[in-house]
Length: 285
Image 1 (cartoon, helix red, strand yellow):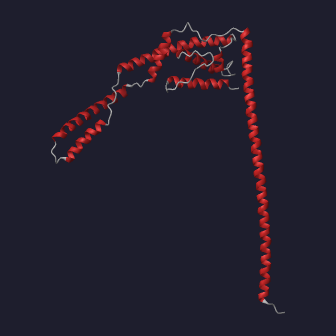
Image 2 (image 1 turned 180 degrees about the horizontal axis):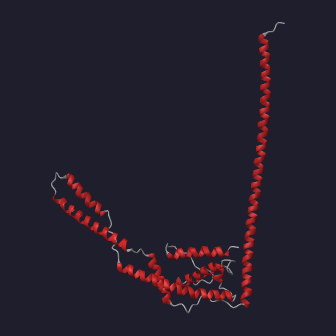
């Protein structure tokens, strides 16, 4: 049987074209199906995201409602207790003298100042002596500038540079032994006074707790109605310092225990931040 090779090749080519067309169709179908699935998944993700957003908003609304209810219950509880309960007085302190508060403030100021240890004072005096020596040499070099010959350019530059360098430096401050001694005494007196005052405050707070007295509004707003379980000693320590802070910085607000946060860095701001954080921790459920 005679076989036309050209015809056979054309037939094979046609079959390959059909197979390619079939594969192309299947690929298109697969891509279309994948695109539909991706669209479906995307829509599901968007729908789930909307549901989560609504749920989150609802949770926030419920949390705010619970918070409002808690505030109402606290206010109602205070009114009920106020009609039948003796109130604790944490605002008047005749047993604490102005002298004690002054000593505490002076001690805090002393701690805030930079003081020299004996070794630091020795090194500072050495640095001052070196600065004074360099300054004298620089002044002599500057005075010599007007007497140098015109061709002494290198020497002129050297002397000028020596003078310029000393003008860019700062003479260290001389250690003050008197200030160091006074600050040491102020720290000691302040530590003694703060221990005495803390003892007075803590005793009265403990007595109020033992007798179940009604706390002032500012005290309860800051520290809650009672010590958290298992943290009574920590709570009493913070409560004592909150009262002491009000005394030291003349805070008289009936609602805000600590008053506005200080704007300047220093001991007062550090203490305000610590007491604010500790008090917030005691109020957590």
